[in-house]
Image (tube, rainbow, N blue to C red):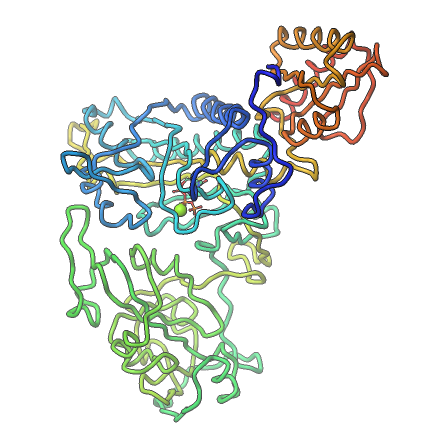
Length: 611
Ligand code: ATP
Ligand code: MG
C-alpha cells in the first residue's frame, strides 16, 4: 500500500477527554474516531488491525476449540428474550425497539437466546451434540458510563461462542478447549493474561473464569496468592480467603458465655468506630447487621421472616420476588461482598436499604440494627456462624431499638441463619484458603470470559434431545466471550512509548514501512524496488511516498507503530536504515539485502508470538 492512496489521519494532540494511553493513541494514530458517546468508528488503519485480531481468534477457535463460525442477526425478536426471562431482568443496558408492526425487538447485548433458538430448532438426537458455534459480531449495551474509548463502549464487537452439550463431561471438554484456545489467542497477541476465578453464582452457572490483563485503569480487582505452586487468583467479587478467628482486643479467643442478653444504653454510638471507643473492644467482637434491599431473588422465601409482605411473581423461566429484604450479619471488621450476597440470594441486584426501609425491617435506625429483632431473613457470614457453630462468642450487636446495643450475644443461641454463606470481601493481607499465602491485589481489565451456563436457557426455552437411553433430555450449555475492541485497546495500552504505538507483529496494520527521505530520483528507485520485493514475498508493506518532510513521515510511522521501518536516504545509499520500532538504534544494511532481512524479521517476530 502506498501512503498517497491511503487515508492517514494522525493528530498531534488527542482530544482532552481521552485520558488513557490507548484511547489517546487510537485517536491520534487514526485508528478510531468518535461518532457519539460510547460509539466509535474504525478508520481504514484501525480496521486492518481489528480484522487481524479477529482472524487470530477465528483460527484458534476453529483449530483448538473445534468451534464453527455462525452469524446471527444483531436485531433479535423480543419474544425470545421473553422466553428466557431476560426481557425483564436485563435492565436498562439492553436497547429495545419496536418495528413497524409494533413487535418488540432487541439490539443484542449478548446472544444466548439467539443461539439457543437456532440450535433448538434442528436438535433431535444426542448424535448431533455437542453443537459448538461462535460469532464475531456487533453488540450493544447502554452502559451508564462508557469510558476509555473502546475499552468500555456502548457499541462494541464481541466474540461470543456457545456450546450445547449432552452432559457435564462433554461441557467440561468444551470449556477446557476454549480455555486452551484463549491462552493461544492471547499469546499470539503478545498479552500477558491472568486467568481468575469469577463470580458465577447469580447466573446459575457452576464454573467461570475471566481472562484479565493487569492494568492500573482496570475495572476489576484481582486477589492473587503469591505462592506460585498454589496459583490462586480470583476476582474480588468471588475471592475466598481462609477464616481468621474472632479475638478480643488483647488478641485472646473469647469463650462462649451463659450470661443472658443485656441491653446497654448507647445514645451517641452510631458507627463501628464509636462502638470501639464506647465498649473499648475490638471490632472483631461486634456483629455488624445491615439491611439490604434485594431485587429479583429467585429463592423460595415463603418460609422467611417478612415474606408475607413480598410478592412472588410466577414466571416460566423461574418464579422470583421482584423486591424483598435481607438482614446481613458479618463480623464488624469485615466488609460484605455484594456480588457474593447477590449470588447467595439468587438476586439480580442487592442495594443497601434506605433509612425508612431500615426502620421498617429492623425496628431501629441504621447503627442499631440487631440480629434478634430483624423482620427479614438473616443471611449470616461464615465469620459469625459456620456449619452450625458460632464463630464469635459473647459478642456485641445492635439491640434493634434506637440508642441501644446488646451484650453477651451468642450466635446459634440467640439467632440462627436463614442462610449461612461466605459473604466477606477478601482483601490484601488476607490468607489464601488453599496454601496460607498472604494475598496481594492488582487492578485488572477483563478481556475474556468462559462460563458454564448449565441448564438455565435449555430449561426456560424448552430445549430437549433424545438421549442415548431414548428419553427426552435437556442439554447443558457453556458460553465464551472475548471483547474484541477491548483486547485491541489493551494491546496498545501495554505496547507504547512517548512516540506512539508499538504493535506486536501479529496485529500491526502493516508489517513493514519504507520511508524514502524524498520520493524522488535514486531514493524513489530503491524504495520502489524494495516495495515490490517485499510485496511479492507476501509482506504487508507500506510505502510512505508522500511529499512531506522526513520528520513528519517518521513521526507518523512511529505514532502508527509499524514494527519495522526501512529508511532510504541518499546519504546512506547504497545502504538503507533498518529500524525495528521497538529498538532504540537503527542499523545500516545494503539495500540489496534489506528485503531478505525484513522478511526474516517479520517471520521471527511472528514465531516468537506463536511459540
Ligand atoms: P464488564 O464487567 O467489563 O462489564 P461483562 O462481564 O459485562 O464485562 P461479558 O458479558 O462477559 O462482559 O462479555 C464478554 C466480554 O465482552 C468481556 O470480557 C469484555 O471483554 C467485553 N465487553 C463487555 N462489555 C463491554 C463494553 N461495554 N465495551 C467493550 N467491551 C466489552
Ligand atoms: Mg458489563
